[in-house]
Amino acid sequence: MPREGTGPDFIEALARGLEVITAFRPHQQAMTLAEVATATSLARPTARRILLTLEELGYVRSDGRGFALTPRVLDLGVAYVRSAGLWDVARPHLERLVARTNESCSIAQLDGSDIVYVARVAVPKIVGLSVQIGTRFPALPTSLGKVQLAALPLDELEAVLAEPTRSGLVARWQPDRAERDAELREVRARGWALTDEQLTLGIRSVAAPLRDGSGRVIAGVNVNCHAAETSVERLLEHHLPLLLQTAGDISADFARLADVPHVTVPAS
Image: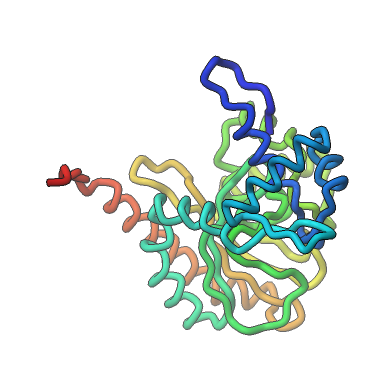
């Protein structure tokens, strides 16, 4: 996150505050003042003032030894999901897909070289990675990431993948450029993506792109399963056709929503 803006309207204090919030990583839910200062490269007095401000606003709590985020931080992400309208549009479609596949289904969007989950309907199964709204994974080794990366122009793709992941996860699949490009060409040609334990052991999924009214890819939707329970053949022969139908239905509904005129009524 840049700390110095490009114009006079940039608010450095706000940038520092957001940097402190994003310093908290998975498996590091509590941090000392020194750890926050080190992670953000901020002076300790500055980090302390920001943490105390966030605590007063309800976004951070302290037990006297360290600091941790509170659930109120989720309001920031939920506000985005609600404003984008994806959850309202996608929920009934995802619920039907889950009922027909008995597998968890999710929607994620690109954020730099990562994907971030913005909608999910899960079934109670034990999987290798915990996923919830806001979970972040490297995009390239995920089916949700592949369908979105394949839609990018080449120069934009290179710029996106040059950004370091902020997921804290090292994927099993680390392709060279030739292997990566071949994989994305295949995804682009067939219109869907498969990952078979490329992110981590035990995780297998298939994804399709979601598009807006202009045909632009805005997200990905997937069916996720445990590799020990669901074969690749079952995933492709049974789940994939249902997924492609669902992706088309969500895209059509999202396009219709975007075409609805929005009228602002002034307060009386």
